[in-house]
Length: 363
Ligand code: ATP
Image (cartoon, rainbow, N blue to C red; front, side, top):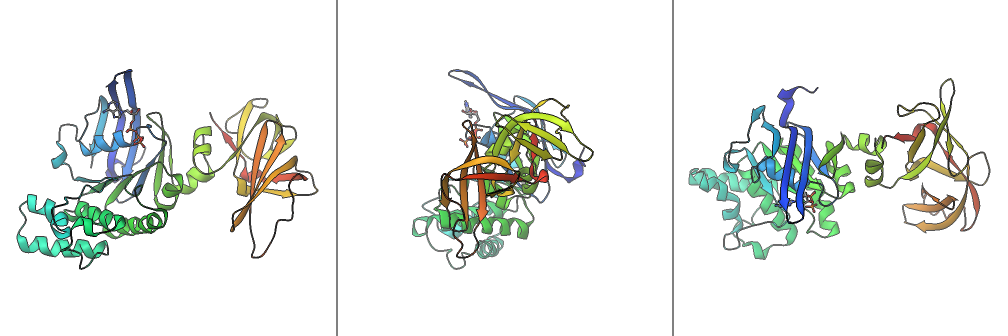
């Protein structure tokens, strides 16, 4: 068990049940989770998996149906939202349209009754932090979407919360701005040292920004880990499939050798692997292989496959193969400059997969 003193937020068997028109909805189902101080923590999962509900419980906008929620080791269920050291940034920036940018950023401090001079200085510092120096006198409608989201961030950071909750804050921005703001948010988090809890359904966003990710599905946390752990070592079919592209192969753990294992695939052929995923010899298994961890060649002893389609993406090329009628398989090759594909559609090829690239899923 992790040291609790490291925990900014701890959920213990946290449960939230809503009464909907169609009956009960278990939005969170016995969630155990530790979010450490000063980390960029992401809740990732498809729509409806319970991410926003978890944020709203931390913020105090909803009450748990069961379990415990602690901040800095203290139970917070009884504390109203304004007495929690937490601020939230929403997708819709929720700025006050009749106030200037500076008034928006200083609003929380004003409510706390801070002296005018201190507010002025803090607002200047916050605007510099989000790179909006000199924008203080403008009104929100005189700013771009990205700038408005920066104002919302400055406002949320101004009273130095211990935890900042971010509910899909970038999803209203266009692709390029979104990429810029991802880097910006990461910088803000490391400069301020505030714990960020970020909600997204975008796996790439989660991988590029987070210190750790919790992958959620149906009110449950399926796996928690660093981006590399989650990407390289998914433990379930859901996580393997949801995070990045993956090839799933079914078969049987057919043989144990001195330092490796052999899998017999339903699509035909044998694969050598290194981990058994806790399975006995003879057990049925599902294997996951990332498209960039497989190679294709014209000859050799790999799995037999046929190229169905070749898709060029500039930096890389995707080969859509079929091992048999039921088994598609994608191989991704990085393109060297000027290189054209050595293979053509319809060609019969061999696929080789390094034993350390094969993950055995526990689903
Ligand atoms: P999204 O990415 O779409 O925002 P999410 O992962 O944040 O999804 P939640 O908003 O936490 O998901 O919702 C989890 C489940 O709880 C969903 O099935 C949702 O319909 C249900 N739910 C959330 N709020 C309420 C409510 N106030 N009343 C009834 N059901 C609710």
